[in-house]
Image (cartoon, rainbow, N blue to C red; front, top):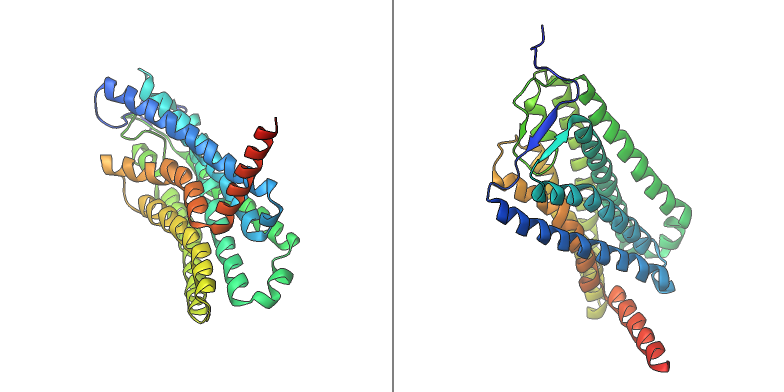
Length: 313
């Protein structure tokens, strides 16, 4: 027999960053600035790649997709975070939790698979340059991108649909700034074995299943780079790959580690969540523009062209 106060769509109270309302206002405007910078940075990368024909290659095709997912991820998480920080009533319904969790799983899974595709692209370009154009053709790149999205949808449904079987009977307090699976599951008064097994299994498959192939690819890539006789050739190869390695490390270490550890409601968990949901989408375009010579050249060309046009008028 279920408790009397059980509801099918309970309203949860979010408790982000234990501090004064004044500090919440400051944080709210700070994250609003971060959100606008994230939008601007990722849209700029997408526009630069679109405008420069020299960047119409598989590597930058995947980078456009990565920027799109970063925009999507940031838009799912940051506006709600700002609302929670600035609002006096910091609540979210279970249905809202379901939507947020489903979108997070979709984006995170798709992005993990996309990062794997980018690693394979770099492996093909550096280790098998003679067949690179043949292997990484437009059809295959589109297949990898669409496949990442499709598997992301499947992973999202696998994790969110079992949430419909859960019942919640209080307390309805989430010590976090958003609805994430590790915080939501302990609040249920339903047996969680099925949900935890699905979460663990999908994390292993999508997390480690993407991470280890990436590490294998880069082990082979580094070995191939070290055999390049030209110092400038080695430098260019390392420059191209290092930005991707940084992004992969930021994404996997914080994301998978966060979801494999039990929720404690600590401030550290919220900081880690901010890393992969807010900071990483902001840093990705900066990392790729600063570490990638071709992107810097494209930015310089567009800037010079803009300056010439402005002076001509």
